[in-house]
Length: 342
Ligand code: SF4
Image 1 (cartoon, rainbow, N blue to C red):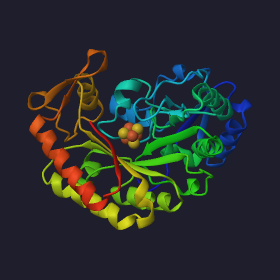
Image 2: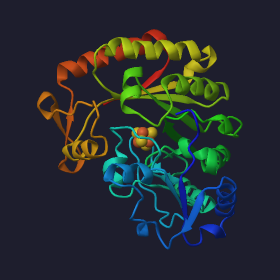
Image 3: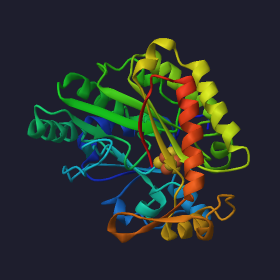
């Protein structure tokens, strides 16, 4: 994925054009010659173009709906943040294991919300409620917001908004390298910019439509040099032939890219691959040729929230994974903070 995302078709919902960002986006898409349609609600968008389900799914993921966020009650986002800040939903990427496949079901299109000021005001109210505690907001719970932000700059505005608050903090994670417009944002050290990274094999085989490992690492270097607190989510950690070398190489490349003076404040989060039965069905439907191994019989069951079981690696595999990744992290980034392994 070298080129930044451009939608194939854009819908506007009522009132979106009452907001400056709505108007700006309309002008931008018109200038790009992108087809624009109007709809009373995104729920009305049902018949996606395409000859079969697979094509329809692909095209749906390239549709952008510009609308208003009506619910200004934020979801919680434990443990990494107190709240999820809703700037967009959906994603243009095609990661085979993406959780959005199950959560978004038949509505895989991307939505962006133009009432950003109202969303920030709601965030400020949450900050006030918790004062004098710090309140953290996660911006990537329902989308990969960086992948879209070169078009909207909503994330950039959010970074600058939280830069001005005393007690608000922002965080997000991305698999995209289109970060240049965010480098001069006045973040004031209040935004933790995280990259999702993985062994080359995993990115190449299971993350089509996203940036390569080399591109993400180069972008992480830029972000670090722009003074952002930096983090990495290694997820999903997936066992494959040569996985030890693959993950070692990933750390080696990070080490080569990141300046020494930013290494005191780097965080790592490690998440092993897991799947549910529902996710397996939807992955096999959306990506029927995937090489992703989803065999319940070789995995261990972990009971999650709401009584839904997940299939994770066997204990001995998990232990080996932990041991290797911890040792690589300590070798290359002895002062980094490990947030969790799950
Ligand atoms: Fe899903 Fe993230 Fe991949 Fe987008 S980049 S498809 S949100 S896993």
